[in-house]
Image (cartoon, rainbow, N blue to C red):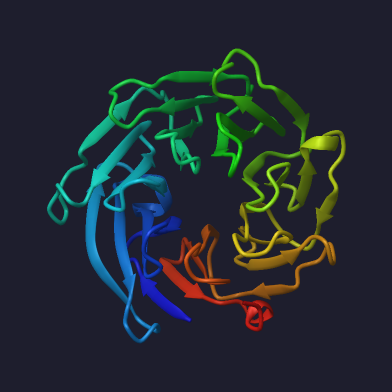
Length: 321
């Protein structure tokens, strides 16, 4: 396991580069995101695979709560912050600690989620906000393309479908999971009460575009199939508190990871059991960020409020290719 310490910053999001297996970025905030500014850390695994090197940092005047890489340009990332703005950072144009290339200001409250479309010809990204809206952006335009209004409470997470064009999912404090066609922004194309509590996270399966996972304040992870959307096809139990983020493995159809407010990172295989196949306890505060390395099988990164960023391979996946 490799570890990095974000001094006086608390981790909210970590994302591996889709281009380089050794590069990743961490979005962090001062004072647990309640006050102060935010910092993006651009990090790289050292040649020995056991060290993490800080390559550059960029600062923002408010807390940074999420970050996502461009799928077409390895120098560009997008972040979302507590002041309701979205920042586009181009490391090829900006010096270390330099300002963002573009700033988009339309949301009225905190942005808790940003995601870049995985469909090659869709050069779009998405933002989800506590103002209860989701917005689609073309990075070269100053204004959003569309605004999606359908949730009755703050939107915690919105993510593009892995393989379905023009499609994203969103989850909210209203307990709902909604599926949207970006060309039909008046109403979602599907909607379900996913949890009794607030739904904090959603992700699409990387190998089956009909399958999604949600995690919520009730500590449950539920697996959904769009072909039979009425009831979950699996319910994963064991988290003591809220599930902050859930993400499917890019290397195995039924494997996913989660992090949460019980300080744990858990690995699941929903086709085998509804209990975690491994529980990892290497944080001492809320664990917020999580990402699989698409370029290196079964490698994970997580980060949390204890200022620690870990890159590791779970023991339960050590023998898997």
